[in-house]
Image (cartoon, rainbow over all chains, first blue to last red; front, side, top):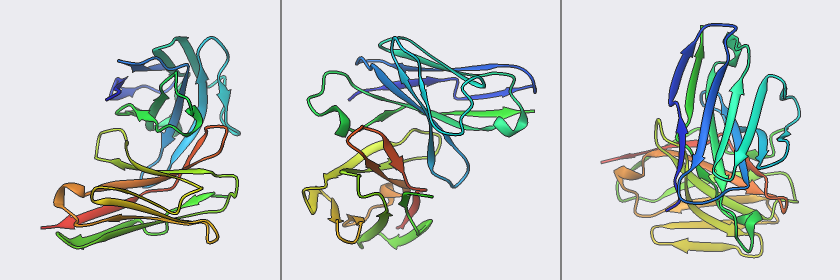
Length: 120
Length: 111
């Protein structure tokens, strides 16, 4: 089955520093990847849609200058939390939808294992 | 405004019995629905899906039922096994391909 690798799985950083999270599709290409944030016992909240070769599309209320997304290749998207603060502490998770599907909009997503970010 | 709701945060059932997880949605533009299963410290994995043109889809021990008029879907697991213990997320897609997730239901299957 399709595998999405996300790392690091956890990171602790000081307030004011930036943290980069990588999301890789290992055995398929993905023009589109998604980034989510999850608070304890809550849903996966879509932050942005990452598009290879173009700008990411951010959901309402998500600061694009705070959460920088780069989708430089068909297998890699990165999320950088800039100038992190304690309120940015959360579980971040990515997903990818394989290219080349006849009904791409309805295909299931393949998720990374998530990154737990703790900002001190 | 939460468009996909899983009103039961947790469910506990005995091994061998049926587990029924429920999901309600409000957006009539949703046309495809999926269930994902998540173990701790792992990403969600796809379980089963259903198109809005159907009312039932079955895959082994897992069956998803869709009631469009009630904007309600449910996941049935029978018989339940201890390995089914996980968090189950309901997701709904629009034709733009964007998925909206419920808050999840933690299922515990007791031996």
